[in-house]
Length: 425
Ligand code: GDP
Ligand code: IMO
Ligand code: MG
Image 1: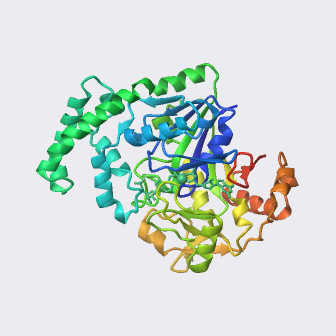
Image 2 (image 1 turned 60 degrees about the vertical axis):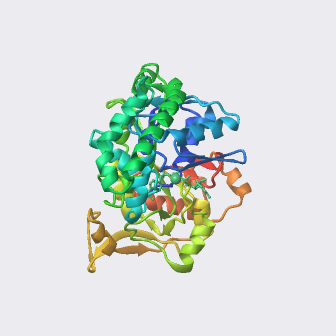
Image 3 (image 1 turned 120 degrees about the vertical axis):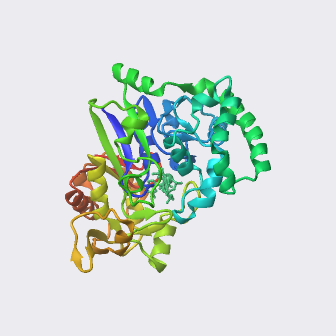
C-alpha cells in the first residue's frame, strides 16, 4: 500500500480520527504532523469511544505512532492522555519529535485572554506557534535536557516583559510561575524522555524498509493558516503539504492524498460560513448528528453541503480522493441542499474569496438534493464490500453529483462512527 496523507477537507471534525483508525490497520506508522490539543479525533471500536487530542488515531492498532515536528505539545495534557489510554489496557508505542514545540501554561493564558474573537479552543495553540516563529519558544529537546530548568527560566525571561505588560502576570506572580513551571516541566521532560527521538528519521527508515506510513492531519483545509478563512483559522498549516514539513513525508515518494468530508458542513468557532443553517433546521441537524466539539464540547455550527468550498479545499490541498462521512445522519434530516456557487451583489463569482468579510457577504447558489436512503444497520451490513453501483440509487446519485462537481472520486463511504461502518470502494 502507498503512504497516505489524511486531511480534513472542510473546517475540521470531518471524521479524520475514524478514517485514520480504519486505514491504520494496513499501515506500519501513523504520524500526526500539525496542531496540538486543539484537535479532537474520535475513534469508536467495539462499543468503546476514544477521543484523541494528541495521540495519533492509530493507537488502537498497536502501530508505531508519532508526534512529528510540526505538532505543538502540552506535556501535562499529553501525559494525562497517555495515562488514560494505558489505563484502558493499550500500551502506547508513541514516539515524539525532539523538535516539536512545547505549550506552556502562559500560552494558554494568552490564548484565553485574546482568542475570543476567533473562538479558539483555548489550548494555547496560537501563542505557541507565534513564539515558535519568533524563535523564542522551547522544544521538547529542551525540557528533556539535563539543564531543563535553567533553559525554561531563561526562555521565560525573554517573554517576561510581554507577560507583565499584557497583564497575564503581576511581577510577583511571574516570579512564582517561573519557579514552579520550570520544576514542573523539567519533571514532565523526564517522563517523556523514553519517547523522544528523531521522528523524521523513523519515517525515512520506514520508507527504506518498504513500510507504509499514514499521516494524520488535524483541523481542516479551510482552517489553514495560509489558505483558510483568515483570520478565522488555526495557527498551523493543515494542508497535505504540511505532512512534508511537519511529519517527515519525503518529497518524491509516491503518496495518496485522502481528504475527509462530511455529507454536510460544520464549523466550530467564529468566522464566515456561507451555507450555515439557522433555527430549527440547525438544531435538528446538530442533534441528529451529535454535532458537539470533541475538544471543547461547544455546539458545532451546521449547514448545507458547501461543494464550492469543498472544491476549493480539494484543489488547494491537492486532494486526490475523498472519504465521505455521516451519510447516515444526512438520511435522517430533510432540507439539506448542496451549494454549487457563490454570488456577490447578484453576480456569480469564479473564485473562493480570500477576504473574510467578503466571504460573509457571499450568497450561496443552491441546488436541491434528492433525500438519501435511510438504511438500517442490517441493510448496511449487506452492503459491506459493495461497489458504488450496488448502492441504493439515491446514495449513488449523491456521490456521483459530488464527484462530478469536485472532480475527484469518493473512494470511502462512512455510514456510522464505528470502525466497521465503512465501505471502501
Ligand atoms: P475529526 O476531528 O475529524 O477526527 O472528527 P471528530 O471526531 O471531531 O468528529 C467526528 C464525529 O463524527 C465523531 O463523533 C465521530 O465518532 C463521528 N463519525 C465519524 N464518521 C461518522 C459517520 O459516518 N456517521 C456518524 N453518525 N458519525 C460519524
Ligand atoms: P480537529 O482536528 C474543528 C478551530 C477553533 C477556532 C479556530 C482556531 O478535531 O478537526 P485554535 O485553538 O486552533 O487556535 O482555534 O480553529 N479549530 C477546530 N475546529 N476541529 C478542530 O480540530 C479544530 N481545531 C481548531 O474552533 O475556530
Ligand atoms: Mg475533531
